[in-house]
Image (cartoon, rainbow, N blue to C red; front, side, top):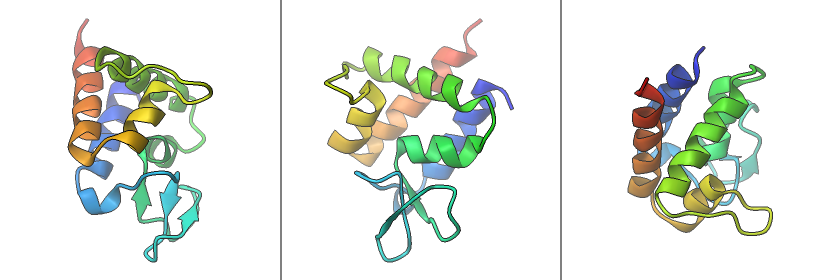
Length: 111
């Protein structure tokens, strides 16, 4: 899977707001935090969606890096240990997260 394909899969996974969450990598149907790789996960934050889509593949880091670049363009900077795209998913709303993914796809699509 390429970085672009991974970003597109993340976008598809998070396109439905009911599949997005904040302040946890993933949540089960009752809202309890869990790992995105665990069976029963139905909601994902941006990082959790990357982990779900990429699994153990080497493409996880390039996808996260593409999202981080897009989040920086949108004005989200690192604070402490929190990277720009982690701040974006925890501090904003679902439409803003989708804008970040769309921008990352656009930026990754350019030659």
